[in-house]
Image (cartoon, rainbow, N blue to C red; front, top):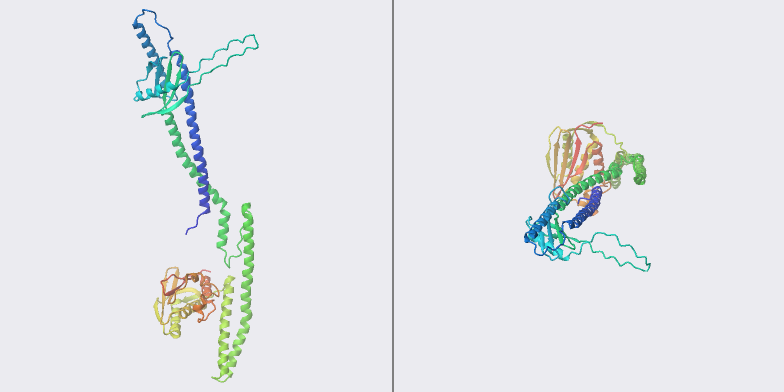
Amino acid sequence: MKLPSFRLRLALLSAALAGSTLVGFGAVSWFQISNAKISRLDAELLNHLMRATPNFPPREEPPVGAASPRRELSKESSRDRWQFYEDSLSYAFGSNTKTPVALLVLDTNNNILYQSNSLPADLEVNRLLLARLKLAPLAPSPKREPPPLPSNPSFERPPLIRPRPPQFITEQTATAVWRVGAAKFPNAQIAIAVSLQAVDQEMATIRNIFLVSIPGALLLVAVGAWLVSGGALRPIHQLTGVIQQVTVKGLDQRIPIGTTDVEFVELIQVFNLMLSRLERSFTQASRFSGDAAHELKTPLTILQGELERTLQQVDPGSEVQQRLSNLLDEVRRLSGIMRKLLLLSLADAGKMSLYLVEVDMSELLMEMLEDVEMLAPHLTVQTDFTDGLRVKGDRDLLIQVLQNLFSNAIKYNLPNGWIQIHTHQTPTTLHVTIVNASKDIPVSECDRIFDRFYRGDPSRNRKIEGIGLGLSLAREIARAHRGDLTLDLTSSGQTAFTLTLPMKLEN
């Protein structure tokens, strides 16, 4: 399972926080701008309603017996004035373009003096205007100077009753949305409806700007958060790089503190102290194993020599000879363990010296096959390698690696099993793979099979000799040659190890 990235999560959280802020700010701003435009439109609409008063003709009765053509002429003149007034309203709201406007004028007896007939939805709009006029309050009268107060101090001025100002509402028809206002005057009633098409277009433009700018801002925030978090996490990456280099040979690595942020200073100091303690512990352990191997090497050599000389002096086939032979075998076994510990201590200290010569790996493999045929004649051996496989390396150490691999292939093989040897050569490397029939290695043991003194499940290995140092030493020798020794993933019922060696070893 892929683990989540803290840097990515930090960038996404920053983008989400900024996004919610920008979306909230954009929504509030959009509604505020919309309300401001509607409020400005209402103010202009109120102003035009108040300015409509001079267009009303005076209320005067015609003389008795007057001719009717004069009345018709007055009606025509009044209609022309209202037509001119409507035309002026079309260019008075908001923009330089002509805004659809509907006008309805009634007299005090609710008779229609003028109504718009130039709009596609005139009938529906006129019904809205007429319905609004029925609910409209009396318009406020022009301000007049209050009469002078009487000299009597006890006189109280009657309360001034101010009519309510016109109310504006938004109505929708089948074709458009309208802002409707109406007012009643002493000699007439007037209602005006202004299309909100221009306001809607402006708000749509603002909305589109928000829809384009907010994702762009979020992208910039995410990229900025990614870069900032990368800079903030740089000491962590530096610490990770040093940790990856921490091996037995890299415990002298330290992280500099001079260019580090103060928040990471304590962490880096603790890590450097931990490296110092580990370096001292590994140095002491490596020195102990090396010193122990050196100190035990001489007594074991002397003991082995004395046993060999004593063994030559006793009677052949006697019980004493048998016991001395057993002791000599154990001493030789201890000597082999001491040699392995000494080599491992040198490998830990990075001081494993190699006597580099040209080694014929084909010849070494043939010698190993002869030993297998002698030690395990019941096993079937299959080979697939050519002559002339030469590498630059330490012949004795490479022989020790191959002996360990073939020894394991014999010890952990199945009854009447088999061993296969394959080689693969490239211009730079040589791969030697040794496969043998065996029981399946548990997955939990695959990662620990190269650990020192690890021998797996005792129930499966208690009858097999060894202390668990062979594979660990073999891998250290391969790595000292700039190569490696790995356990391959194979099918069930077999085990495969691959030894990788460079064709040319550079000092």
